[in-house]
Length: 251
Image (cartoon, rainbow, N blue to C red; front, side):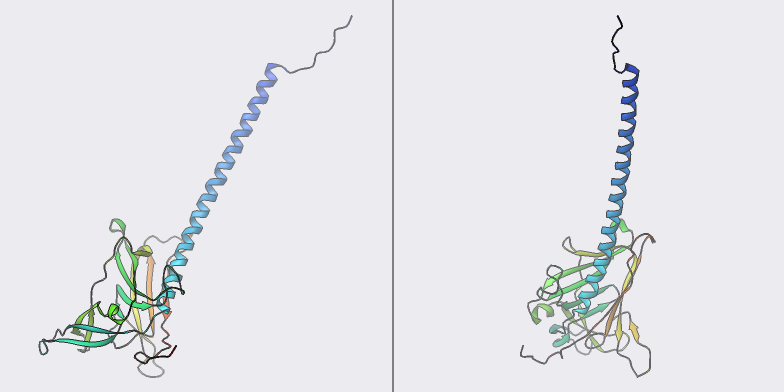
């Protein structure tokens, strides 16, 4: 009598199948890991590019939102011929190569829908002394007296000799918002009105004239240039004053 055929697999076949399945599983895991790492790097790069682009947009909108506030400046006249204190209304704007103070309708918290803010922008040393960073402080604007408290007095301009307002130094704090970091340099310059028609515009490193500049330029360069990433660039913002300072408006 013939024996019935018994179908099945041998131990060697099982071992081969398990080995092939393990190799395929490891290959799939490595492929998933490479894909996730690539996704993470791409996402981090996009987030950094968005942060750089967003910071430049914020800087542009803060400057474009300048409010022409005339604030009382109470302080001593630093002039040997006039040692007394003086009170004078000034166009509230501080423009220096590494510091700028102004009133803007743009708020970091609420954008254009927020209340006016006194903005303090300053260039400070970077982390561990590497490069510099641009920071901004926001102080709620509650009136001309709130703005006038930052003026410490008057001193003669070394170039023109005219008495110009002096301001308290800008101090960075843990609440300061970092607009740009890891910069090789960052400096402000201010556009003066054209002296005569046909002449090129004049950019000054400091603003000592009466009133407000026609534009503000913020020059920045990365500490370590990387063509694969969005780099901080120079921002030029026009200053458009739609109201005459000192004239009341019924609105």
